[in-house]
Image 1 (cartoon, helix red, strand yellow):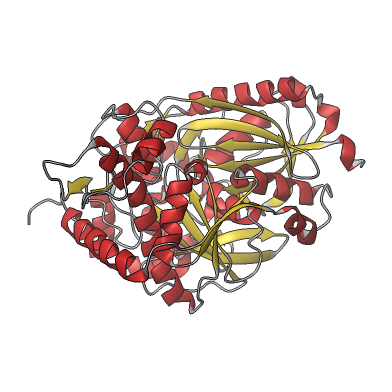
Image 2: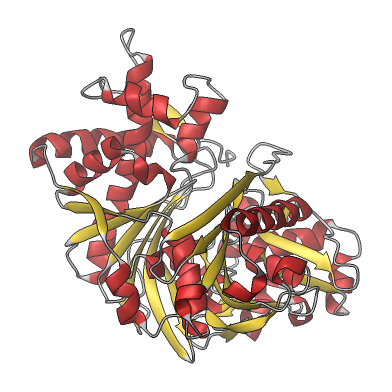
Length: 502
């Protein structure tokens, strides 16, 4: 293969938009296409997507990116898929039609079911096998809800007439014309149904959630040829050669290959992962133990802290409160003040993730005075992203016994210098933004490229990683400690807001 003449196409299917990015051998972006799609909120705390709109928007970006790059399929070496994790789709095996809207990872409708599972003493066993806590975040209870609430679904699942998948499986099914029903281990590890030590669906877990094995996709490695594209003529025959959950893909794209290396993705949510090597480290502080990736038969693991609302707080100020027109205006306003004037925004719009795992928490604003202004609220929104991330780093260091040397960052909100400087101040450590912040798509591209020998090994990938800006602490530890204490006080008062009274 003449790598100079070929490219890798990365499908990056996110929570609010579908994107396609084409990379060359130097990991440089050749073309980008993006389409937003509709967010559905049928009830408070419920979040859904139309699976067919996910596919149509993704297909449109693939075609647009190919046109922008002026490529034909002979010059695309492989395709990698990365996806919003935990979002749950069930479709008819014969018709390919979804039987219900996709239930999004942010959705909290199964909170009571999770509470019941805890009361029935299932949590310790589930955590031992999956590395996850019992929370509506994960796919298994969403799958159970659809089977319970769509007439006849449980029997059809038992008869092998339905397919379950996270978004990676749904896209793979579409791309291959319904010929391949599979997932990779990084996505499977987020379902509450997979034993992360064996890398297989676990019969005991399936029984606990009453999930028929016939509905499940085959679990494969993160970097291998899954099958050829047949649904898009422009890419017919091109191999789909990688799949990985978006946060694991970003860890790979940031070249965090050594134990102790940490990345934080500032996207719709914020997700911090620390590579822990080939041994899963059980968390003592409500972090998740998860699969980073499997390449060949070798599984590597990570500790993860999950924040449900990160950059989405910016969208909330823009779309719901109408305080700003775009993220650029928010950054300018936030930079116009030295601090928040004592105001704190806790963006627990869909509950709180790590380390609280409270589906009943709700968004709150504390510390308002008559003088609190628009700029200070914008600043408080950005600060909330950094505070939540700092909370995760503190407990990640406790769990791993490793001291953070640097934090590699990516995602859309990582474009904000103000946010990253405040993050460095809070952590009292170096924060590094790479030249390519599209590391989620890049990670999928790297995994696909390795599968078809487009890149030789991880050493080649590490050489591609270069920094853009480095942020070092500028405020004193004492000042940051005082502000951080105020944040923790605000968070504590937002907990259990919607929990039913006993």
